[in-house]
Length: 466
Ligand SMILES: [Zn+2]
Image 1: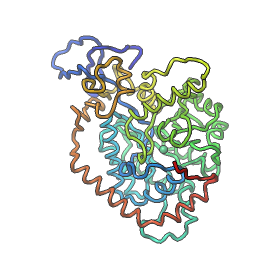
Image 2: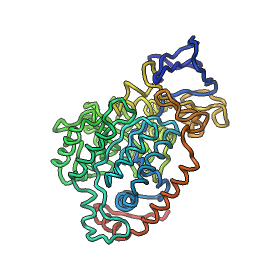
Image 3: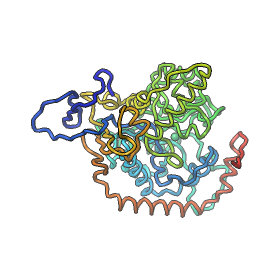
Image 4: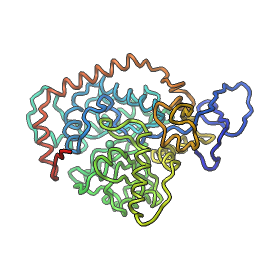
């Protein structure tokens, strides 16, 4: 997984403190603890570049949603049902769930910043997990009503959700950065998840938010863009005209961007996080193929947790297949060589590290880098006989094959079990939290809120009886 070193059928990997010291055949050293990795594949930890981690309690809550449903149920209803302790638990469990499946770095697009207590809980939850990553403080506005309260003005609800950056978020984001992320050598760094700028009121407000975010010196700004056609503001084009795209912006989705817009992103050193399963289910090809052909650096994210698996194996397999399909369809009169699994594994590891500005530390098995790595067990049914390690991981791999996970030289998972996690008690807390959220959800007038969003979407909505 580092072409300058090459791959090994059998080799030693020496870890000293938090870093990879050396890789090679038969490293001789005294007093080292030896871990026998025979019948394992060792890979760098996966890098998830986009996840709404707080949604962990909502796994599979509804499974046939369109964008209207998402705005109605998640952005206007479930979010206000979270108390601070639910927010903290969701972030903590979402992060250990990621670790359990071999994701060692996570970009948490965190838009449940409702009160200061919620923000404290969200930041503390991800820090407590021991994962590496970026806590992207979300400047999205959440509705101000509480479940069970009378909603005085439904019209204001949409304005609340789509409104411009307000003073409270500016102060609270700064407070959170100072309180939790002032050290540059901690595992989690600070970033900003911008509001939906392409659906905002004006380009001037969007630029103002980006300039404000830059003033906080975030590791990255994460920005949803062009998931749907005809968004009110063509944010990539507008930022590009003003030379405001830099490598500190990580765009997310970008399915409906033109080639010239993609080129402006590639030329600026920025890139796009593709979230294959959600994007395909909303009806758009991921930009991975187009970005790759332009020399860009596509990467992968998990995104929302309500309808999709939360591990990288599902995303990699979905990418492999949709990428192969896209190439086959665009070369229907030729016979082309298929995309190799190695390419997909690089996108899920080193490309993600580059996208987050962390490739000097992680993303490959390279001496001098942090020891973030995963042992995939290949001895069992489904992976034996193992003829090709890339194929074993990408095509046949599953979280249950993840035997051990290490972050910065420390095991987070060993012999199939997460360390320092008492799952029976966490499970009980999680179920209780889910029950409380759902109880509150039923106090909210769904029909009125759905109609409000339906009227605001400038598109025909149909329900197919398939
Ligand atoms: Zn997202």
